[in-house]
Image 1 (cartoon, helix red, strand yellow):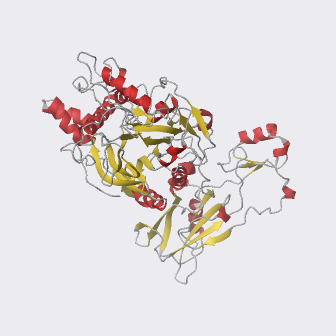
Image 2 (cartoon, helix red, strand yellow; image 1 turned 60 degrees about the vertical axis):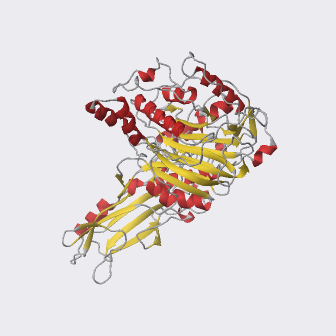
Image 3 (cartoon, one colour; image 1 turned 180 degrees about the horizontal axis):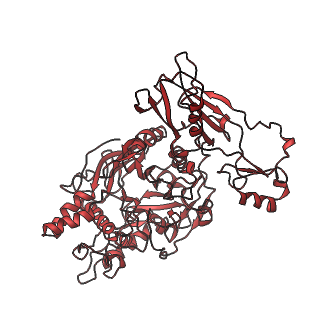
Length: 635
């Protein structure tokens, strides 16, 4: 067994001190005081290596050099090949077996596992059979600039950055120099994983292919929150944005969705990455950050929020509005509470900066066929796409329900007529929560556990009731929700959903979600192959040729939500592909300008523009309802 030499992420401390023993008489104009890799990343091919360099001049002034200082010289060098661990290809090897298996391992445990259990046909070649054995000390200069983007030739090799002050005669000073060494370079992520689409109802009509549209929802995990303290099991380089952004983009493109709703998108990531990259793929994007103070992160202030993208060849944007839960809370609390002190207490609890982004889209391909359907300016079907991220605090079930209530009451008050709804997002609520029950059934039973915690005393004063008929794509198509949409060491369960109007839309298929054996390959999410702690959801829809029959009016004396639930369940049954091409029911009255979402005081914001290989369709019938999920802890 050969132990590899230790490679510290920063060799600067020893290099800089060596200058104190230097015989140089001339003091350099600057001294390198600090040099480090940002978060100790392993470099990724085609992504610039993130480096921080601090200098001090002769006057004692400290400053960061971003490559403009003429008194310092940079030099990047490429080191020898260091193979990855045989059992953990995403980890650098630290041990090499030179006596038996001739493989490389990341730890003593992996070495012993290979020594005792690795079949002989998986052993590597003997050292003397290597055709390109490299000396351990061989380093080759690859760049003389401060910034460097690794190439394919750098894969599985460490990089070293030498930083040297320059003397008057143009030579490098031994005094005040520093060097830092990276881990081995890793290639950009491979193509996204393929995900099978599960068909609804056991049949699939070829005619639907020209009518269907695909929706994708995903909490992509903002770089603000991707810290080693929260995800200690994830490799540092796999947590880095330079790695995760490539994986996220590949998955977004591989699903070829017509509509994409993303949560936890940082403003800088939207401007610099998502918007330009997805524009090349034919998408237009709209962004709204949360109503929170920006956070200082990696040298600048930034915030995160929701981003909605749509294919410009399929949809055209008609309108866009922002639903500001904080502003709505101020109005709602004022109507429920008269005591100013109690109002302040309630607003302090309920105003958390969360928002919803509502976008009205018109279908450029499919025209309306019935007088009761809402047409867009060009006669196409219109669709209201809502993207939201509900509060994540596990001890604030009342705030989550409050935000869900504000969202649905605002949508109900919009002048959208019979317009179909898609409500996508991270609701931070499991299928046994009050939020889920309220969205699906239109009311919450009085003895629900989530209603017990009501520190402000407002839940009992709310009229928790709505008449919007809503169903989820996964429960409708597969008989149950996805088993996991969030999978970390601390919490494993379902928090994300694609809600839709079953009386106007039919769900044709959903993407299969990874099972637990796949999610635990690297302990939990995120990992080197799954860039977020959430799993993306994908569903395929089509518009009903005619609206489903409207639910009958609720008879007097029935419990709240009873009549509505029956009508909504009937509509949900029609939302599958087993329905006839047309639904019954006469036309409903339309409101003027139904695709304009103007609503006094309810909405805030202006009009800011901003199948992979599925291996065939797995047929699944309607299976009924799903069971409860484990108790929540949210990240």
